[in-house]
Each structure stands twice: as structure tokens, then as C-alpha cells.
Image (tube, rainbow, N blue to C red; front, side, top):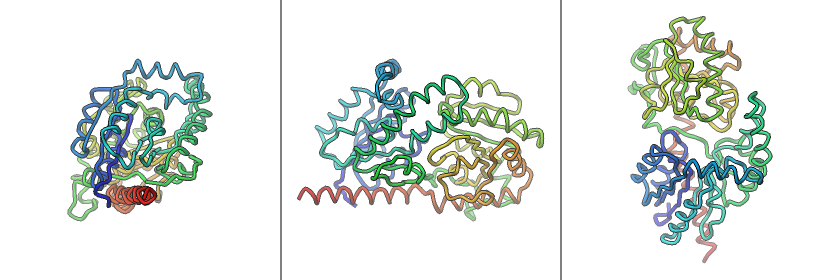
Amino acid sequence: MTDAAHLLFLTSYAPSTERPRAYNILRGLARHFRVSLIAQVRSTHEQAAAEQMREYCDCVEVVRLSRARAWLNCLLHLSTRVPLRAAYFFNPRMRRAIARRLASEQYDLAHAEHMMAAHFAVGLRGVIRCFDTIDSIARLQEKILRRTRGAWQRVLSLEELPKLRRYESRLCRQFDCVLTSTEADRRALRAPNVRVVPNGVDLDYYKPLTETTGRPSADSQCETVPEPDTILFYGRLSYVANADAAVYLLRKIFPRVVAKHPTARLLVVGPSPPRSVRAAASSNIAITGRVDDVRPHLRRACVVVCPMRFAVGTQNKILEPMAMGIPVVTTSEAITGMLVGPGHHLLVGDDPETFARPVVRLLRDPDLWALIAANGLEYVRQHHDWRGIVDDLAELYTELIAGRVGAQR
């Protein structure tokens, strides 16, 4: 551990429980290093979330990006080789904030979170530059193109995909170290300096109500899941893959569940639900929108569902309920980056009928419910504890910093 090491953490969104990877990596690194955060935000909600990170940081600077500026960026870069996913976040105010901080403090390492902020770190000199891609955006865009049927989304994907492939690969090669969340994403990035840092769960934050044995049991089900027949889907619904999963659930899967189990109820939780999701609200379907804390809603659920039809990286909306001892039903697509055993740690269905069937089984069978809940909880504790994951990352950063110091002597 290097007590004097000082990290500059750059994001184009506020680290928060809604953005758990940046949030937990920053908090974990703050146990090992001094950390300064510069966060670009687009709303008062994001600004408030960024300000809360002062608890962990030496310094927090918040930079606003207006909607007008973001859309102007996209317009100006339509005919360039820069993908819109990156261009949207260009902001001279952010560059000036970084320059001021570098002029006033000596930093050992700059950690840039996601493609949305990586361009701000490319030109930095005198510091080790690390880029957390989280996952491969080009790989995600390929999946969107294969799945989507909307004309506008297909046109946008066809325009963005070749740009993303070039830009993402080139961007990775301009950093000293690149992080991503799964082996599949590491291969897709096509760069030599990529390391896998898996997503994790804050096990002190997401934990079962019944902690006497460390795992739920059949006789504790009524305490752990207080509302019988309740199914939950959650996630940021502005994200195209989540919105697609929610619509698929509402139109194809949940009607089959109700046909087999008429008392079933569905909660859809998450910010920015599109009109197609909001319109589905009914006597047995609740659409909540944004919530400050998802855990009370998770505790209402007997089953959490994650019917992703295209996905990259590791899905936090699978890991978090598993950490709380709640069984999950998902698709094979959503678990490609995980070491889970379908039928053991969670249940899997890849079409509406085979997805609805295990949901109903979990609603009806308390012994199966308890078994899947216990196995899922054990899996998360073994493989996805943020504390251990970030301790390993801090060790890597310590070695990089020590190597740079040694090279300067």
C-alpha cells in the first residue's frame, strides 16, 4: 500500500448506487489511496449524488453538461469518425476542471470511468492513465443491431458500429492499463493491456433480512419475501437493453405467468420508463419509476426476473437480489460473463414459455425457492464481493505506481 499515492477519478456521471461499479470502485480505492473526483453531471439529481462522494474523497468537483451542449456535440460530430456515445459528453468545462486540478495537485494515477469520460484522460501527462471500459460498447452495439427492429435504432446502429469498433480499440491502446468486467469483453476490446475486474456487490448494503444462518430457508420465506406472488424487474430504463427486456417481460412473459398463476403481481422499478412500459400499468402491474433505494422493493419480491435479450458485462440486477437471498430467473444471454450454474444458483429461460415456467415454479414451491436463494447467495459471496475485488485492483494500481516511481529514479 502506498500511503502518499493520489488518484484522480474521472466520470461523466455521478457515482451512486444507480451506477454501482464506479461507486464501489471509488469507495474501495479510497481505503487505499487519496482520491479526488471530477464528475460531469446532467441533472440536479446527479449533482447531489456526486456531492455525497465527499465522504470518501479529498476533493470533489462537479461539472455540468447541458442538454443543449450535448446535442450540439452530436450534431458537430455526425460526419466525423467519433461515435455519438463519446461525442455527446465532450465538454471544455470538464477539460478546464481537470487542468486546474493537475496544476494544483500532484497525482500518481488517473482512473477514467467508461468511454464517456476516457477522452478526457487520453492527453494527460505525468500520470499513469487507466481506463475502465466496464464492457465493450462496440460489442453491445452489435447485439442491438441484431436484435432491434425499429428503423431509427437500426439506422443509428449501422452508423455507430464501425465508428465504435475503431474508436474503442484505438482508445484502449492509448492507456497504460484498461479494465473491463468479463473475459468476453476483454476479447472484444482487441487490445493487449486489458485486465478483467468483475462487477461485485456491496454485501453490507445488499444482504438478506434473515442473517442468523447466513442464508434463507423454507421456513423463513415469509420473513424474507413478505409479499406472496410478487415478481420484480428493475434497472435504468433509459438503457436500451433494459427497456427491451421490460417490454418483452410485459408483453410476452408476464401474461404467460398470470395464465398459470393468476394471483401473480409484477413490479417494474427504475428511472425513465418509456411510454410503452408506463402504459402497461394495471391492477397487477405497478410501474414505480425512480426510487431512492431499491432494497425495500427487492424485499417485497418472491422472484426477481432479468429477461435480457442482449447484454454485455455482468448484470448487477442479477447479483444484487442474489446477495439478498432472492431467487433470480434470467436468460442465458444475461449470464455469459458469470460462473453460475443454471438450475443451481439461478433459473434460466430463453423464450417466453421457458422463462415463465420457472417463475411460476418458484412462486409455488418453497423448497425450490429456498434452495435457489441459498445457492445464489453463496455464489455471490464467493465470487462477487466488492471488497476483495477492489483490494486486488488497489494492489495492481500500487504496483503500477511503484513501477513508475522506480523508472524515474
